[in-house]
Image (cartoon, rainbow, N blue to C red):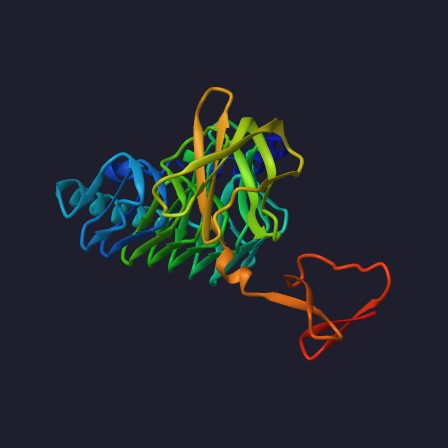
Length: 369
């Protein structure tokens, strides 16, 4: 009988620790997609925020081109209360003891289950970090990092098996740097600056005790437990002499009806070029492309919009193809009499002749008949 009680007691000790941790109370700060207690907020490019943004001490710039569904708060009663709530939440996270100490190289397919994790140095995240809730109701994740956190470009945090983003918390005793097209899920409180690069997506509250916030064409939302419509791996373009080739790749798609590709030369007036059907819901890699035959022979900017079957849409950042720069890379083909018989852009097309060969002489291609 005593043995049975001992086993039950050990089982309870091992598996009840995480269940005693409640959600972290962010107070007024919970309405902010991004907020800093003390520091400037500078947006560059067409970022979009769902939720409030603000600072209690500092300037806010970059709106427009940044847009938001929410409010901008700067040194007002709301930010004053949010500053107090951020400090209280940070101190609460500090008081929670570690259940497990892990290494500072996160990602690479790494799987974590509900627990309180501590990294004792600065950390970086590369590839995918998977938070597995094991279908435990209201499972809590707390990850505490003693130093800077760097999310390398294209890295992502995935939530599986009933994890909800409002139950994922990060305490970072340093700055947070989120790379190009990275995906961050969960709410974090940093003790330093926040920098979010182009194409990145944040689903949660990004809060800082002190430090500037800088964003470059991102999407940031307050905690939203719906799946992201697509995970974009790349969005690129190049001039092919006869056309501009635009191409993009997705890692996964959810409820994706179609893509709309648009072009502008001034960043204001956009022309719709095409609509391309999406893959619906897919966990496979999908690639898309479009040949723009009507491009302007100057600077051409392209943007991509994804639309769900229910009509919701998301705009991705601009890419640039500089056709003026491309046009300067021209080679000439002359015959032995010095007569020009053809010309082309370097590296864009092979030139073939039926009877003879092309010989390169000091940057000029000579055709020997």
